[in-house]
Length: 92
Length: 153
Image 1 (cartoon, rainbow over the protein chains, first blue to last red):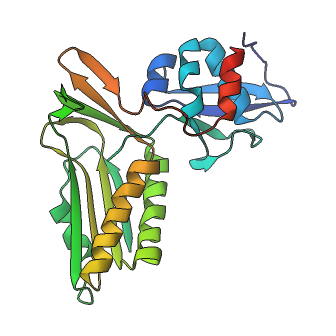
Image 2: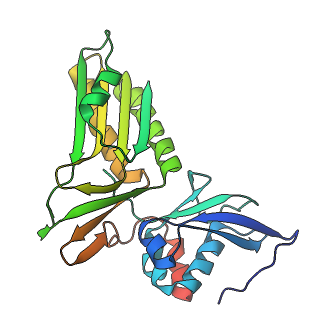
């Protein structure tokens, strides 16, 4: 289960954006999340899946964007980063 | 020149064609993606599009630059509409100018293919009996590492 972490110097707070099916499963388009310093996108995803287990089905198909750029799951997050998980795109 | 935009307004390729036109270019190829009334054998009532607008515009600008550098386009314009769209409305418009037709055709084809592959835009099909995000059935694409996470939860 996700544990609530209070902001300290050993933590970072990021802005999370949710789109499409992710947004519907999580019930919000945007939130802030506080994580231990050194956390990566994968850690944020684990928190989200713990909260909304239905997300797990789409785990393999998510891409990651940090500050509007495609990134990798293991890239360390910085305080103030904007993180988005990108479910399979279907534009055009 | 690359022009990109995510908008809620009605869009047309004709408006974009006038934007990319130049006296040095002999060819303009344009493309419109249109909302159709069916998909995979099912009747579609209308579509809802959603975008990560800031990132989508950034990715479209990169794609436009690639169309110029790799396919010889002179100017590229890409506009994607978001929100609710009815059958027959235009969801994406692209116009590409190049000195000659072969570059223009190739650059336009590259542009729409690349947009569909990696620009963060999503469409939800609405049927008489509900709706579904397209791509939600996709499997084994993207990050295999996340599968490990999902197994833990």
